[in-house]
Length: 110
Length: 114
Image 1 (cartoon, chains in turn purple, cyan):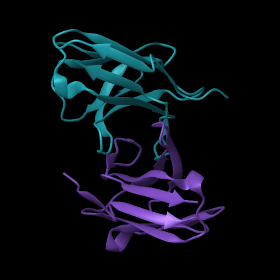
Image 2 (image 1 turned 90 degrees about the vertical axis):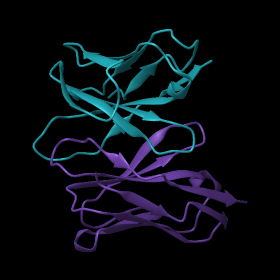
Image 3 (image 1 turned 90 degrees about the horizontal axis):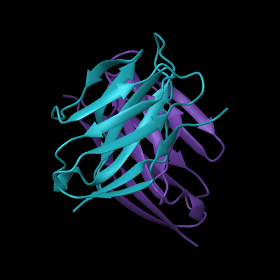
């Protein structure tokens, strides 16, 4: 099956710093989503981005489908950005049967 | 617009028992997917329901079963619980279309098997 690898596994930042999280996947995908899981376990969809670039406030994401990777950028990080960031992919169009990476645990210190 | 709701939030069961978890999908969503998230891992796809039928299954044994009701709400049943079934169980809903759409997750049910 498809492999999803995320790096780095852990990241510690000071408030205000910028960061880049990476997701590599082993096969062509029709669906790539980024999620944030807060310390209480709530999983929030950040981006649906099978290709191209999207921005939402301080967060942006880029997927280069031909090279099988996606990047999540966090600028001017805040303590509320702490949590685990997951990349998830799906091979089929319209199925939403996602394969998740192991995540990047981000800690933003005040 | 109501989001995805799951119940209960926490549950403690004994090995060998059976458990039922519940999920109400987001308004307008007719597809429900269930995921298992072990501690320190990413969520793993269990199965998906569409129009009350199972529509795809991950690598989980038959003692994991589900139902979807006409109002699109869903149940996950696990029989003969094992210690390794301890995890956060997440339900996600989406509208069934030809194209992919963002998944919306509930807050999960944290199951502990002792």
